[in-house]
Amino acid sequence: MARAFLFVLDSFGIGGAPDALAYGDDGSNTLGHIAEFCAAGAGDRKGLRSGPLSLPNMSALGLLSIARLASGRSPAGMPVPQRVFGLHGAASEVSHGKDTPSGHWEIAGTPVMFDWGYFPAGEEAFSPELVEAICREAELPGILGNCHASGTEVIARFGEEHIRTGKPICYTSSDSVFQIAAHETHFGIERLLSLCQIVRRLVDPLNIGRVIARPFVGETTATFERTGNRRDYSVLPPEPTLLDRLVEAGRTVHAVGKIGDIFAHQGVSRVIKANGNMALMDATLQVMDEAQDGDLVFSNFVDFDMLYGHRRDVPGYAAALEAFDQRLPEVHRKLRPGDMVLMTADHGCDPTWRGTDHTRERVPIMAFGPGIKSRMVGIRNTYADIGETIAAHLGIPAGPHGRSFL
Ligand SMILES: O=P(O)(O)O[C@H]1O[C@H](CO)[C@@H](O)[C@H]1O
Ligand SMILES: [Mn+2]
Ligand SMILES: [Mn+2]
Image (cartoon, protein in one colour):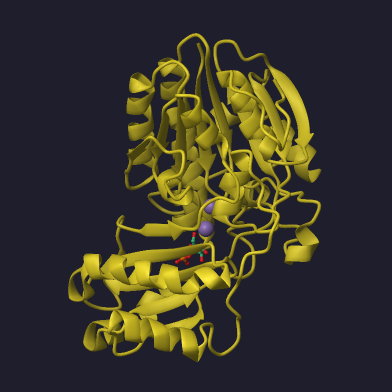
């Protein structure tokens, strides 16, 4: 029997989404712009990396051809490999949101065809009624922030006042999120998690996708730092996903990183947490030894998005891609007959784009394994084709959305 390994490189878009204009993202291209900046010397950072973007393993898996197919442009400065291995293509998203849950659920065969609730970008993001209810139920003296913000900037701005007053920092983005930053010890991590659960219940009627705890440490603006204890409280996916279907069929779903939280723990047999892409890769490699025939290992590599895409950090994103690419031979060495590794992304987050939000883009599909033939599968109309491909590979019945490309 077969095993499947699904890796989401969070936010690794390749441009070309047909509906990008409607999101204000026409021309955004995470891979394309990183490559362009690196080729022009604008991806250099002393002690970190320099020169053109170098992804030899992903290039050998077809990344450059699918980037050209998806966006009409070849990534600048990246040498074209002599031969391409594995199955490769690109996919457009049909879900309305360019957020992480929409992307992951659609990858797992369940597009999100309703509109999430969003908080307005004006003066106050959260209504006085909602703030009043939160303060009453959680016994808080008030909240700080109450705006659209980048998480690191909002902590720099309000962190010291938060420590002084005990008021949590509440903010949102163009995603359907209510985020709460609070100090791990001054406010307390358990108290932050209970607060998130209260807020989760209060924003349910507003159709908000996630309430997210963003704990941080440090004593001053200059030293504040977010920790790995982030916790997402998501609503349930609208229909059973590939994960539910696998568990129903008696299979084990190993969720590495934030996959468990993203799926609200539905269809997740086992959660393996790790902090940072390299630790997530180490954890994934270990689970590759443990997974049984018929299992799915589903890993999310969050640094691309959280540390570099949202922070609009081109050298950081480039270095993270290069470090990830260097680990792929280790993945390859773990493979057994019948295994398939499939790499993709959930949305874009172009580090050269305006603002700090995600960008609507197509995503890459790169699959390899001992029995996987080299083939171009073109541009798929929905990420759900990825989930259906994994369903077909693992031998469970097809779902209602998407088509396997095997
Ligand atoms: O700026 P930070 O706090 O990283 O927030 C980002 O993380 C959120 C959830 O992934 C996104 O909606 C985006 O706003
Ligand atoms: Mn994401
Ligand atoms: Mn993000």
